[in-house]
Amino acid sequence: MSRAKGNIAEDKASDFLSSKDFFILERNFYSRFGEIDIIASKDKVLHFIEVKSALDYELAIQNITPTKLSRLIKTANVYMKKNSLDVDFMLDAVVVTPKSIELVENITL
Image 1 (spheres, rainbow, N blue to C red):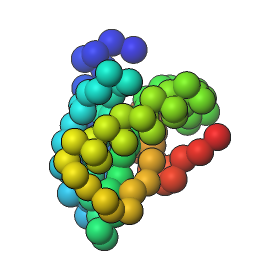
Image 2 (image 1 turned 180 degrees about the vertical axis):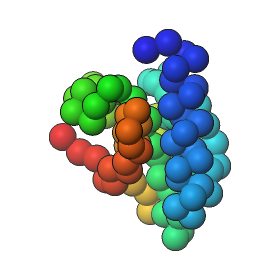
Image 3 (image 1 turned 120 degrees about the horizontal axis):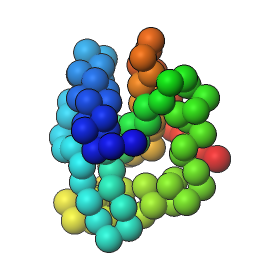
């Protein structure tokens, strides 16, 4: 996916999350391990969110591989350490398709 398409999906995901009472803290946080698309908070829980878009839900969600999840966890740990945070957190995904946007909380493999 091109960076432009990724930005559009991230914009849609951010708007969707904001409408669900998430507070967007940061977008596109980079570490040497990878990138976190959106970092948000809601109800005193920090959410590290991977945005995936495709023509349908199954194609999008399949792109969250064990390697991607491992990089997401490592990058979340870097963010927490860099900001001296000791709070509850979750790894989530927002799946953006032409027909819907869906939040998948607490992703694991």
